[in-house]
Image 1 (cartoon, rainbow, N blue to C red):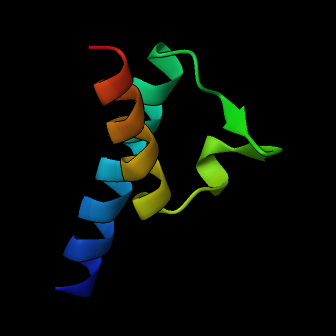
Image 2 (image 1 turned 90 degrees about the horizontal axis):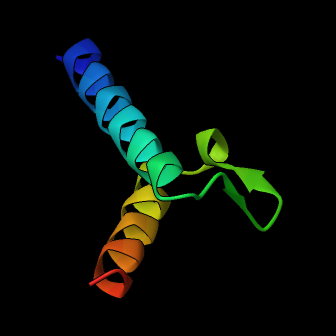
Length: 53
C-alpha cells in the first residue's frame, strides 16, 4: 500500500508541476518546482487558477 500511495503522490506532483510550467511558473524564491512539497504546489496552482479568472 505504501508504494501505491507514493506513486499517487509522485503522479500528482508531476501533473501540478507540468500545469505550473504551462502557466509560466518555473521557480519561486530561488526554489525550483521539483523542490516544492505537494502542498506548496497545490497552493501555488490554486493561487494562479483564481488569479487568472
